[in-house]
Length: 117
Image 1 (cartoon, rainbow, N blue to C red):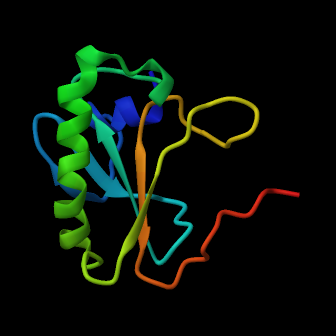
Image 2: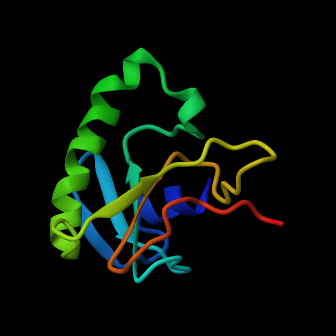
């Protein structure tokens, strides 16, 4: 069971921003921007975007449709924000093998993601 599954199940605490039957949004405990939230699908476990099938389209569409609402709750809808997801593998740093989306904002972000040297 991943840390996100434990948070969804209520076994671990989180600083929740938004929750309903389908998604949970909470503040990242190791923020990489002034505002850094995570949005996680709840009713099914998908490890990465590579695992999403047409059967998951409604859930993923719902999640993406809620991101602007979550950005509004965070107060960054007017100034802009970045949405990122990782897809496992050796070239990215997906620390938790549970599909999730990062919302970053609240400050000026660089125009690109710099590679790790």
